[in-house]
Length: 165
Image 1 (cartoon, one colour):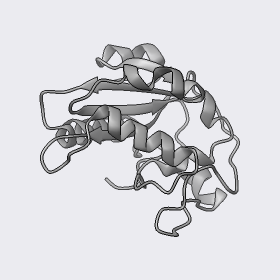
Image 2: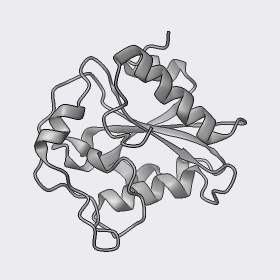
Image 3: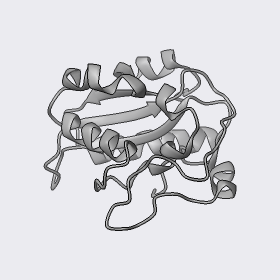
Image 4: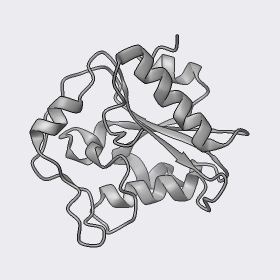
């Protein structure tokens, strides 16, 4: 069974980058184009502090924030994996660089259409989290679903910021 307990475990799955969110302007061009999956991870498992109002953008006037009780209920202890996203593939035009860029701009408060993973931006330490990516030959949606299913089998829960199965 796949382990999601450390940065080393995530690297063993073929992910690369391991770029700190706070340093986004410095690493944005190192993200490859093309299809793949990306994840948001913490450097070590921890118990976070939650924000009533995070930094996520209001896309089409919708408030991206949720109640702290929901955040606490969704938190999964003993793992570094917080969110799994996909980029490119059938019916999707955005490759890894663009999709991760959209995600980062959303987290900077821009009204960008990246609603998935929005709970990350209500974590007080979101700027210290890491983003890493993996190019895939397989359909990114299939790879994303497989990672989430493996996580769910291990923890009996989806990753913290993955709201839709």
